[in-house]
Amino acid sequence: MGEVILASETCDVANEVICAPADVKELFEFEVIFTVFGVGITKTIVLTFLAAFVVVALLYFGLRKRQLVPSKFGSAIEALLEFVRDGVAKDVIGPEGYKYVPYLTSLFFFILVGNLFEVTPFINFPITSRMAIPAFLALVTYVIFMFMGFAKNGFRYLIDTIWPMHVPIGLRWLVGLIELVSVFLLRPFTLAVRLFANMVAGHLMLTLLLGSGVIFFTAVGDIGIRALIGVPWFVLGVAIFVFEIVVSVLQAYIFTLLSAVYIQSSIQFEH
Amino acid sequence: MEGNIEVLKGAIALIGYGLAAIGPGIGIGIVVGNAITAMARQPEMAGTVRTTMFLGIAFTEALALIGFVLFFIA
Image (cartoon, rainbow over all chains, first blue to last red):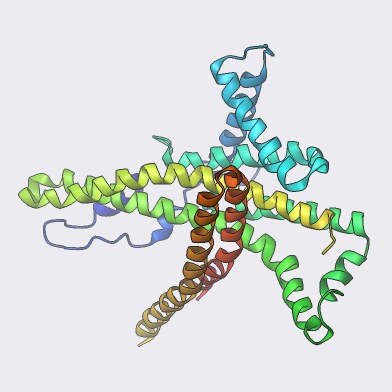
């Protein structure tokens, strides 16, 4: 939000009707704070490490003392863990799924914390709205399900995908082509873009709505009663704020769920 | 002249994204509508239906996401 207010300094609210930021990239690209070994550290990198640290701290303090009746915080963390273990790993992958619980848990918690940075006061930036992070997480899932597919089924995994025997011969090449593109290219791609697009859209909406509200309120001295235009923007912004909390949790869940589904479809490769 | 073409390209990309969103919009509507029907008929299956519904939404969404990316590339 600070960025839009910076942009608004060049905009005369009293005369101009629409104040557009010069370039929307300024909401997502930050300046280098300091340099370590030639690598520029930006706000995004600091927040990424902070997210990892928060995840470790949550799990450590939540599960430090094992009690018969855990504390409120401990049982909340346990409920989330149980949700990933039973609701995602066991339900989707089956009994084999317990092997993937550590991966899915770290994925879920990291994305959840990264997404919730969007609505955290004084941070207000979802790290998952930079393509690098969802792309890398999707790449890890891609490597896992490709590796497990070939390890469990051998080369039959590739052949059965492009030449499915259960499809009538006339359509087999078409179905094979669609399956090939969908399994090997579109799956990791859409997995990454879904998270990225949702977070970019959320961050933009929140910044624009709350930012315009604040700009109109602070300009009340210049434009007088017209500052009331800011009220609907601000109210809508607060409504979207609550909605974005739901979106953050939902997107973390969907990313984890789809990772599990992709792993399942490659290790139990029988149509 | 050069600037006009740039603006026009952006506008066409925007229209393209809008067109790409129609199909997935209808598809997600069908998926969620049928999931609600199923949950209302068999509330005891609500958990399974909800998981499957999210999966269906995720697969249907793929086309809209491709359109979104093409909008950025164009």
